[in-house]
Length: 387
Image (cartoon, rainbow, N blue to C red):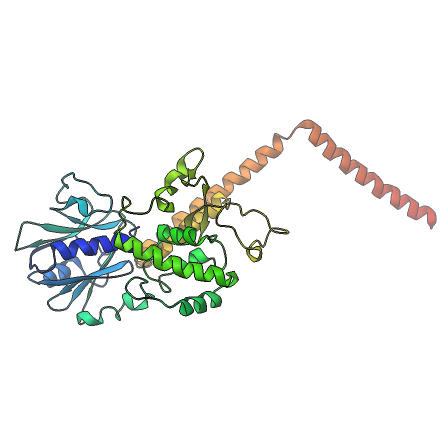
């Protein structure tokens, strides 16, 4: 999912190639999921002939400032992006190969009268959102959907005292805290993991158990990581070599990923997201090792198939909160049916294991049962004799 750094990259390229130009042609594809509180036809009508005066960002949201309202406010979701016809290197996964045009998964495209360049909003999974916000440009930040988002740590410097106060009031894993856009805007999965790795804090550590030193480290790490992610525009060739994001993708390898310092990178699920961390450097505090006696080593979470499906459903519900009710219910039904099917498979497996149990084990079990039965009979006889 494009996060604060990737969105900054898009905004930077829009400022270079689109701002100051007039839209001459607008093409949009009908999609009631992507076009939120508007339609593709209204979008075409409202954008054609408009001049683009600026491009702005707040966290994962970005928008174009037009010469008059409404202004298009956009969110990439999981797989959204803006392709620029004459600038294939604008993607955070840079390429010099000429782009296919029009690109696949196109939702809308803009052509300008000043040159032959074009701009396309694409989204394979249709979890992105495009809205038209009919307010003055200066009021976009205080208008939904952006109004309900917390501060963007790069656009608006946060105070350490504010962060400490929020952390103390919450009782949830610090990774889930960082992902909450209502608290801090723009931090997604890889940025959150980078912040915690840099601060040497375990992702499952509960916010209300953090020490003063950990809170201070977290505050500094939030500012450092988000600022550098934006400055480099999430270009991995420009990120520090010791950043976790450059080495976390060894998850599928036989021995997992390893950091250049030699520490192993492991994975667990926190807040419904896969979290990368280095156990040797990011240790849970004693107050967080609730299931361990006298402390111990934090172990990656082992998820059952049923739990994994449940988490997948939770993530789907969060990402598709804007999806029409009928489609959301259909998705939930499919998920529940899959859970039931897997539960049935587990029951069958357990029955087969019982059938395949060694004969000696069965004999021991039978002998124990007979012995227990004999003792009960003996005790009853003794009781009658005493009478």
